[in-house]
Length: 407
Length: 125
Image: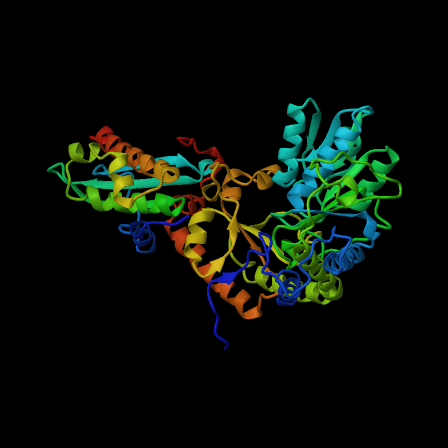
C-alpha cells in the first residue's frame, strides 16, 4: 500500500493548485530575460511579444467555451466578472426597466452585487431552488416582468455542485429580450460549454478553480446579438473600454494555458473523478442518517456534499485533521449562520450544520479517497457517541417535537 | 481558526462522557441549546447525601469548543457543593480554554447547563 501524505486536499471548489505546466508557462512572462513587456506597448518588441501571448491566451479561453476571442474581457476573477456583468448590464438597460432576477443559492459575488443594486433603486427577485438545488423553469417564467432586464443564474453551484439547465433558461430569456448572465466559475473545464449554441449573453470565469493562478478571470460578452454593458473600471480604455487596467500578461497566459489543458483533458478527467466520487459516496452509503445535499445526477463529478445527521460539521472537520474539506456549519463562518445554500434547499438547520463538502480534483488519488472514507467514518462514530441528539434519535424521539432552549 | 491546546486535548480525550438515569432523585440533568443553533449540551450531576457532587457526565452536539467547555466543566464540578458550582462563570471556562471571542457562546452554554442541572436536582428534592 502506498503511503498517504497528509494533509490531503479535498477542497478543490475553494481553489485548486496551479498546474505545473501552467506555472512554467507563466514564468516566461515575468523576469528581465522573458517577455515581460506591457501588451499595450505597440512601439517595440517587448510589447509585441506580450501582446502575442495575450492573444493566444484569449484564443485558448475562447476555444474551451466555443466563443470568439473578441468576446473575452480579462478581469481580476469571477467576482469582478459578476460585478461587471450584472451592474454593467443593469445600468445600461435602465431605460427598459430596473428589475433583476437571480437565485437564493447564488454565490455571494452575485447576491451582494444585487444587494448593492437594490440600494441604488433596482428591484431584485431571489428565486428559491427546488429541494434538489435545481431551478424550476416555471418559477423563473412566472417571475419575469416587462421591466426585467437581467437574469443571473449560476451554471454550477459552488457548495453542492448541481448543474443548472442554462440552455433552457437562456431560451426563455432570449424570448423575453432579457440579458442572461451566468456565473461559470465552478463549471468551466468541468462541464462542456458551447456558447455558439447556448443563449447566454454574459458569462463569468475564474482561472484558479481550474488549475490556473488566482487573481485572473474573464467575462464573456456576446457580440451577436451584441450585448452592451457599462464599464465599472475606468482608465486607459483597455478591453474595448469595458475594463481598463494594464493587462497582467503572466496571469492571462496562466489562465489561457489552464483552459487549454482543461479542453484537452476534461473528458478523461471527468471519468476519473466520477469514479472516485462514486467510490467516496459508496463508502458512506451504509451509514445511518446520511443525506446527500443537492441532486446527485445533475452534478459535477468532483463534488460530494453530504450531511451526517446529529454530528456538528465543525467538530467533524476538527476530527478530520488529515483532510482539508469545508462545511456548511455555522461555526465555520463568521456570521454563525449555517449555509444559506443548504437552507434554501429546505434542509433543516441540523442537517445544514452537519454537512461536509468533499471536492476532489486533478491530483486526488484513490488511496486518498479510501483514507477520507475511513477517517470520516471513525470521526462520525466518535462524535455520535458524544451526541445527545444521536441518543434521542436512537430512543425514537422526534427532535422536531422537542422544545429547545434556543440561545 | 486555530484552537488552543487545551481545547484540542478536551476534544480528543473528552472526560466523563456518558449518561446517568435522569429519573433518579440524586441525579440532576441540564440540557441546553438547540440543534438549530448548532449546539446542544446535556450535563448530568450525581449529588451525594452531603450535598457534594459525586459524579458528572456529559454529551454534547456542537463544535470543538462546545465539547471542550462541557468536558472541562464535568472535571470542575466533581467534589464541589451545589453552591460552589453555581458560582462558576462562563468567563472562567473561556479563560481556561483560551476561547476566541467568536466561541465565547460555548462557555455561556456550559454555564447554563450546570445551572439547569442544579435546578433540576433541587426540584426533585
